[in-house]
Amino acid sequence: MRDYLKFYINGAWVDPVTPKCIEVINPATEAVAGRISMGSAADVDAAVKAARAAFAAYSQTSVADRVALLEAIIAEYKKRYADMAAAITEEMGAPAKLSQNAQAAMGIGHLTTALNVLKDYHFSETQGTTLLVREPIGVCGLITPWNWPVNQIACKVAPALAVGCTMVLKPSEIAPFSAQVWTEILHAAGVPAGVFNLVNGDGPTVGAAISSHPEVDMVSFTGSTRAGIEVARNAAPTVKRVHQELGGKSPNIILPDADFQRAVTAGVRSVMSNSGQSCNAPTRMLVPNARMAEALAIAKAAAEGTTVGDPASGAAIGPVISATQWDKIQTLIERGIAEGAAVVAGGPGKPAGLETGYYVKPTVLGPVKNSATIAREEIFGPVLTVIGYDTVDEAVAIANDTPYGLAAYVSGTDPEGVRKVASRLRAGQVSLNSAPTDLMAPFGGFKQSGNGREWGEHAFGEFLEVKAVLGYAPKPA
Image 1 (cartoon, rainbow, N blue to C red):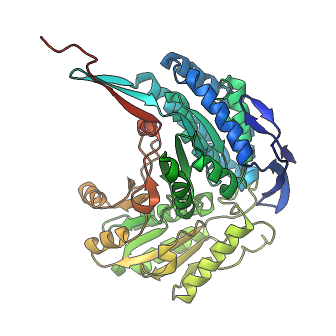
Image 2: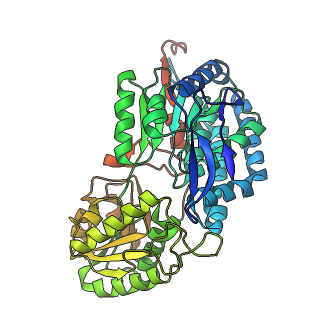
Image 3: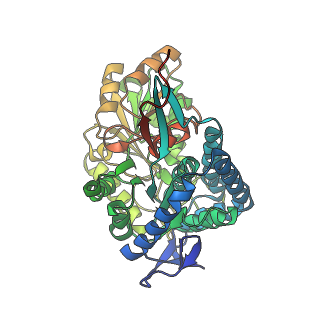
């Protein structure tokens, strides 16, 4: 049982202003795994004041100082790596292998990436007689979700620390354990008091207090598009910068010349990974109508070969995060069937023998029209929708026919053909032929998938203001 009843403010663990706690549920067992305190606007105010006070000194630290700090955090993270992986498995049900090899690994990956970018980053340059300076924006409010918990904490905190910002973090209240471990790591690494602060709580209370606080200079939010709209609305009166990484309904175009066995199988596995709880999952698979039967047969085999079970069992996927999420997924699967989709694999209900825990059958539905509810709404579970097309032009049109634009995927054997399709897709990141993750590549979306970019060098710009100093350099003779 984990009891995390204090917040981290101004370099110390402190009690909430008004005591109130909630239970955190292990989604694999439905048992109580721990408790956290729920913050209030008063707790946020204390954290923001600490961050504001710390900004004056921290914003003036040298690059060498911040390089040393990131190196110290990485060293402490390595010491706590197993603790981080275990916390993620317990709080959100990720299989132990996924927590070890991907979830926890992304945290150290973003820290290392920020360190490498910082070493060579140019914070100033001259343009004629004018000096252009990139300065830390100030106090940052960071609001993160539960699905890749430390990944989304690290990809905000690491660049913010690197450029000289101070911050207040509100992690997800249903998966808060990894944020606690993260905070303990930063404290042990010697992050100066007030530079990093943690306040647990829910979105309507703590999230709203952060995004509306007049002393918060920017807010970076990852989560649903619905919640992102509320963050932007709350931030608007103070005209602060708002950075958002939101929902997705990413298309995966399997071109006619693709290796179908490889491409369809890879697409199914990508959707099923992390129990489908990834905002950039390729949940709409587009295949030629002429090869639909072949594609569905391959997808069926891949889905039925995806093992589901306890996170410690070695199964490929574990549960989804909560009863609420399980109910939502079931409702959408049933809606898809009611609207005419055939169940190719999986379907409603829990897998056999897994009555306890929020487990979902790896499900493939299709063929469906792109107008179907399951092709329009983000399901956020191990559910793939298969859509047919007759021409590549039609495939591109269907792919772009979505309010989202976070990611897209293309598979084919002709490199030039794949690249041409990629150039026509309205998405922030396009992956060709199952390309591996690139932590230096900018991550973020078009349209209702958000604004701004995270990861790598592009992330630094989200936390910087540009100052122009006119007349700084002498006029040329």
